[in-house]
Length: 311
Image (cartoon, rainbow, N blue to C red; front, side, top):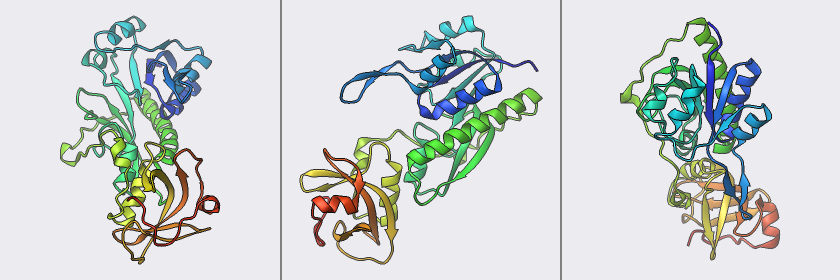
């Protein structure tokens, strides 16, 4: 089989390794479609999507339509793509785009489908307390991540993993899985497998409201919340009239006190009572300040035992 003519669609850092592996393989990438440039940060500086930066370095044409319904298919049709590959593009593709390439549209999804269909599968895996996640390549269909499975690869979730650390690991895993998928496609050995809808779960987008810590919950659940919302929107509690963002939690079993009570604060970290057990927080960030180890934080601000957080 001759190499297919590919259009790649992706936007954030997660998609960069997938595009890079296409370039390394010498695939014919006719164009890259990514989200429009956005203004970010306090200075509102115009920021290019990471995928666009790599595409421009490689001399690949970049398309950034504001609207895709009724527009994108018309932009892609003259490119005559045999295959469209999607990795975290960030928009739902209309059927007229899905039906355009003869070989279909392949998506790299950050979960072991049919589990965690939706926009935030990596974060939801951590929030749920899962011990394993993975990446799936799938044929895209009109539903929400409902298409046939092509290949999948599992990845364990460690006790210290955050959404951020998993994003990096899974981006690389997804790029390797894409390469395996293209190899199988070329060899004619790909066998699409329908998903079992009875096993499906959802991974809806994150909400800022999910960042508020409820110390009545078990320490293990609060740990998952802190790690699952890192790097965004970052879990926090109240320290006086300011938000205190928390990082690098560790569950300490057997500790008992009123939920939200500071048990100790020393060079090991900030030990806070939960609904069951306690949580040792090793890094914090107060509104307007920098993220730092608790040992450094308490040099400038007292955190006395018995003080209650979240009030």
